[in-house]
Length: 130
Image 1 (cartoon, rainbow, N blue to C red):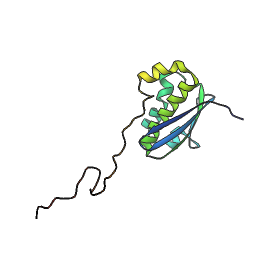
Image 2: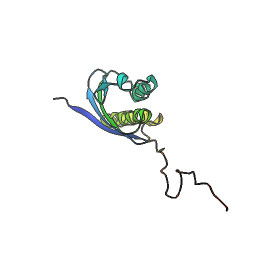
Image 3: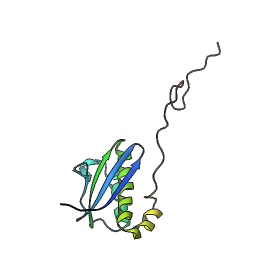
Image 4: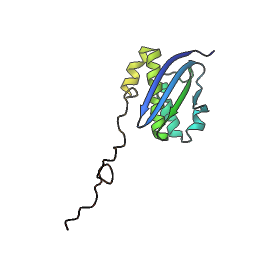
């Protein structure tokens, strides 16, 4: 039986990530795949690993992430947020460095919804005087 050291929920745009922190040697799995295989783009892999780099814990924990919703960018941001929250839950001394880098702040930017009587969120139907 594998014991979870800490849990963290990360969100960005419409993506939600559940992060499980376990003792190990730095293995990160996202939806059952290695992080490099799940996120093909190296910049997304870098984003996911940022909280671990800041706290010098790249090879200290195994991380299991279940993420759904959104696209690759939102999912990577949600994973980063969740990892940061899990690290703080496990060890409160990590809070200062993670907060300074902005990893504990939930990015509130979302797509604005379309309003009724309009073509889009801001776009209106063409006005005709006659």
